[in-house]
Amino acid sequence: MMRSTLLLAVILLAMAAIYAVRGERSGRTAERPGRSWSPDASRDGGRADEGRTVDVGDAQVREKDCADKYLGRRMPSIPASMSKNAVALCYRAFASLSSPITRTPLWAAEALTPAAMAEAGRTERVSEFHPEASLDRDDRAELSDYRRSGYDRGHLAPSADMPGYEAQQESFTLANIVPQAGDLNRGSWADLEGDVRSLARRRDTVYVVTGVLFHGPARRTPSGRVGVPTAMWKAVASPGEGAAVLVATNDDEPFWRTETVNAFSNRTGIDPFPALDSEDRRRLLRIGGR
Image 1 (cartoon, one colour):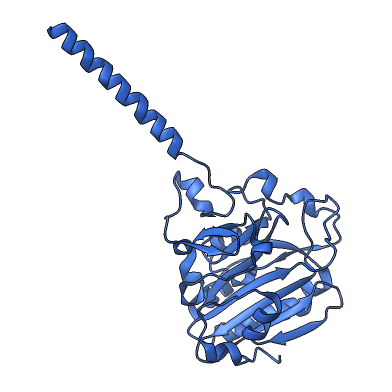
Image 2 (cartoon, one colour):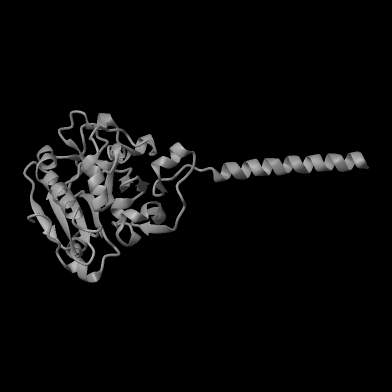
């Protein structure tokens, strides 16, 4: 009788161990496209905090991961046609939404402060472009996609905004880079980035979202893998003062337009600042001489 009882106990323990292993395996899933993921999580051996799941177009992302980068802690909203299977990424100084269709970021969000700008000004610019290791190879751009493409590797969240070496190095991930016309990147777009930093040095917090538009026939780099934006946009908000969205065609001789957030959202379906006060949405913020 004692032997039978002991044998039964051993069997039950073995079965419990089997089910535990099965349960662990079924719960150990890779991050799917459309889910938010911190690149640091893969290096730290764990996932980013779960947070609250929200809809952003067709992407499922977790607002908590990089909430401090968004005005009112609400991430930008874009149409489902653009955000299909997109992946939200969180870094030290910016957040981005990466598309596996264009293999580019769709937007990058920052919260700029005078202290961060001061630290950025003291940071030596020594970094290298690199693929985003947290993304599947099929869903990300590679360095080879930009070779002899005829385009610059243009930052959405600028390297010069980054407060510290680690943040600056993260800004060189290809998940923050798009094919950008060289004269635009090094000319009027760089001037705009400098004007935004100047504004941020004089305000408590300036919220910035930089993104891309894809209109008309699809353009791609020679590799055929990376989409080339037809236009670039930068939305800047200073709460209580107003906001502006500056849009430039992605050409060496770009056409520029400046809009209120309401006008831009109505025209494109993109809302860079869902939590922005209704009055600020209609009030145009002056940036530099624009």
